[in-house]
Image (cartoon, rainbow, N blue to C red):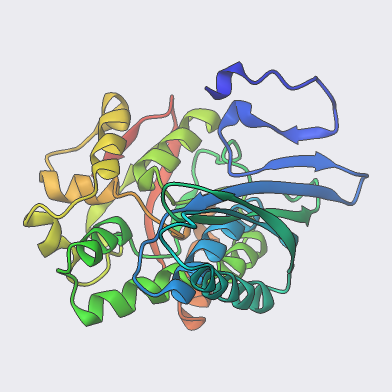
Amino acid sequence: MLRRLKPRSDDRLLVDASTGDDAAVWRLDAERALVATVDVITPVVDDARTWGRVAAANSVSDVYAMGGRPLFALDVVAWPVAVLPTELLGDVVEGASSIAEEAGFVIAGGHTVDGPEPTFGLAVVGEAHPDRLLTNAGFRPGQVLVLTKPLGIGVATTAIKRGEASPALIEAAVASMTRLNARASAVALGAGATGATDVTGFGLLGHLGRAAGESSIDAVLDPAVVPVLPGVRALAESGIVPGGSRRNLDWVSPRLDVGGHDPVTVLLLADAQTSGGLVFGVAPERADDAVAELRASGHDAAVIGATVAGTGRMLLR
């Protein structure tokens, strides 16, 4: 569908839909660029206020993934007014507002329609320095790959919907989804990262695979060191996996060398995340300090692999 977009050629449009990046970027001048994105989700938890927090953190993540900081946002809502009370929507908005306050941006308004199921998110405008953008085309051969949040959110939220998630898993999943990627973005920039993407609906393999293709690299991953939420593997082994994760794996499979790893391990690498972390590439000598800084701030971060010159393949070793 995005191939049918034909934006007018303009030197000020630094990032458009052609690379499938996390946000659009428009240069204002030599020092400033606008970063614009929009994202919406359906409920992933039972509590309305928590869902609002997750949705807001998920939406603003795209700005952080580009190396930017959010300025303001607009709510985007579809609400089944004949089924759910609007007071409940107020709880959702209140949750989103708490994330905006934490992140330092303003929710200035929004748009609401009557829809068949509740859907909520934000259109976010941020800013970045045009020469310090983190893009999915910016990865370079010889870098180390750092992941800033554990995988397994898709499995966890599917288990929540089925009533099969433990209280500990629910707590861990909500904590991960509501953790802003602001610190992760700052650490990536401070470590000299040249490329990044956030890990959301297309999973680690999907988002990193697209970035590998746009950057003309291959990504070599060690699944044994990729952090995963506790209890998720057992749920995946029992068949609790979202359909989106399987579609992600189907999409990346032509460019994926599984290296003898078992199907569940591979599927978790493709798990569809909501408000996942960032994955970024840095020089090897900067990686350990970046991970240590992230862990000191509460992130379950890890070095998960490296990049080599290539054609967009994903290699599991």
